[in-house]
Length: 144
Image 1 (cartoon, rainbow, N blue to C red):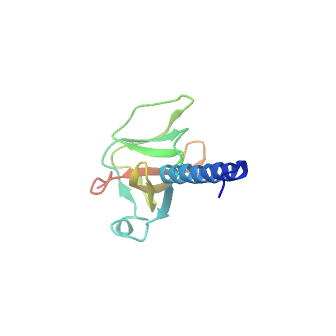
Image 2 (cartoon, one colour; image 1 turned 120 degrees about the vertical axis):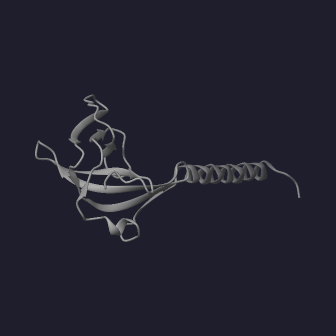
């Protein structure tokens, strides 16, 4: 069988398609992420939807680039105030204040691994109701 320009052209096209598929698979692996609700699993089900007293001063912040579950997150042991374009402190809690977490969610990506978040709602002084996340590490809860 003779090698013709048509055979070379098809070979280049096939190699190009295989290369694109390979690059696509690599990008999918890097960018893959999943989010799921784990509210009905232990240990979360035992403390969700029950008022919890905070142990330490904490601040709810709005982060421009925080996109896991909410732009708002609870920062425990932090009473600093930010008010710039990318980060704003929107509410502060004192020890003994109460928060009720209503959901637990997990986030997985090949880049970060698996992480867990508790989700709560509150009303700001402006009247806006926000939902915020708290990055949860097993056995380190921000409340008693």
